[in-house]
Amino acid sequence: MRWPWQTPEVETRSTPVVTAQYIDARRGIAVAGDTTSLSATVGTCAGIWSRSFAMLVPDPVDDLTPDILAAVGLDLFFRGESLWHIGLDQSRLTLRRAASWSEYAGGRYSLALSTPGGSKTVRALEDEVVKLTINAAPESPWRGRSPLALMGLSASLLADLEQTVSSALPYTGKGLLPIPSTVPEDQKTTALQGLRHGSLAVVGSKEDFGHHTGGSRSEFKRVELTPDLSGVPLVETTRDLHERVLAAAGVPPSLFTASGNAGASREALRLFTTLTLDPLARAITPELARKIGVTRLGLQDLATADTAGRARSVSSLVQSGVPLATAMSLVGWDNVDLPEGASKPINSGGE
Image 1 (cartoon, rainbow, N blue to C red):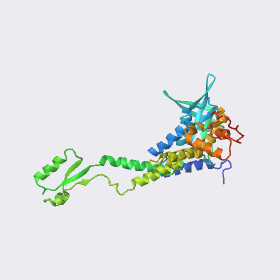
Image 2: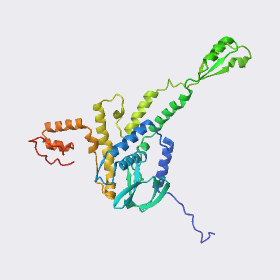
Image 3: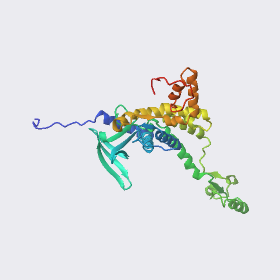
Image 4: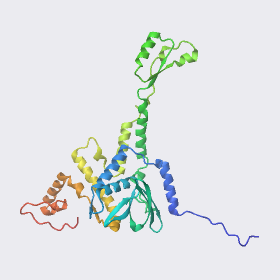
């Protein structure tokens, strides 16, 4: 007989989002160890992201200073997201960078703000924070993903190669010198004098230990302890991984090659600006416009240094029939005094 007041066991299931997050975390541990494998290439990518973001021109320019933009670029590269707490200093709006945070339902946040005396926890609502994300997954659109999370094993393998070479360096030049008992005393003394400033260890011949008799002099030669890396294509593999990591981070590999010329570097910079920096700036602009009123992140300061390229663009536009004033405006030189008789700019239909 069944007890009438018996309650059935409640089966608890996780939501699909939690399950997807768990699977994604386990995949990250299996693929890349769930750690950021730092190397010179990863540092190069992080540096160019940070410095390029610092060159962006916000409109208006009151709140986003270059140091804040540089920190945003660094956070987006390593985390895929950057969160800032909005505060007021008298009548001026301030942004404080969150070291870590927890996000709850209903747009509630718990922020950890680092100070010289420790970390301070601040609770805030959604309208009190600026949260910038990139590469969000469809199952968790509120969370950003770092470019490092999309590289697979490339960044880790590059760091492992550097670690392999670094681990082999302490053994460089070290070895063993077996001395059989049949070696004359004067020759042994000469050999030991040569080891005074060397990195060799003198050991007895294994044949002497095996037979308890005078060993063969064929063992009287150096035995290297240095790992043999001659058969490993370190240069080719490292170069290939270096280019893969740069490309995965949106940085054209030709921008950082020893054989690149000035023209190739300018084209690579234009490619990085057009296909990486501008889309990232456009992706975070809606959040900035909604929270602090920044409606645009311009690239004009990055293009200012490319005077030769802009001059060629003006020449091509003018030869195609575009008025000089309009061509000057299209390349960002609309504030330059034109020569007498230059035509007035026409409506270009966009920026």
